[in-house]
Length: 108
Image 1 (cartoon, rainbow, N blue to C red):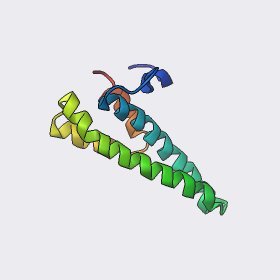
Image 2 (cartoon, rainbow, N blue to C red):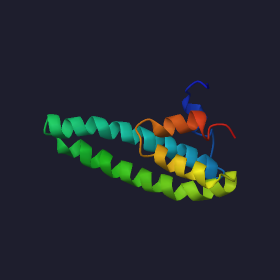
Image 3 (cartoon, rainbow, N blue to C red):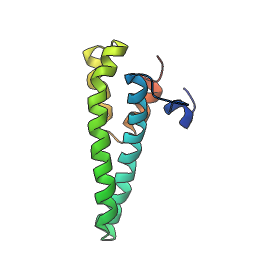
């Protein structure tokens, strides 16, 4: 099991291919999902809807980017249909993209 480091998710200088872009977007999509859970508590528990509106919009954009980058990444990495579906399902589960980085697509 690999240790968690931010440098593992973000390439040092630039994103060079769809797989690198996918990994960066997956990290931020997973992070926004966790932030969204926090802002849901703020919205419904403390009647503060504004943070949820902002984080929800960011999460939606990152989710769409994740799904759009999934197909060119799958083609580049020669993933089969099962792995593509698995990667999509991981984006729907909290901590799923972090699991994917460590166990599914983290190792080239």
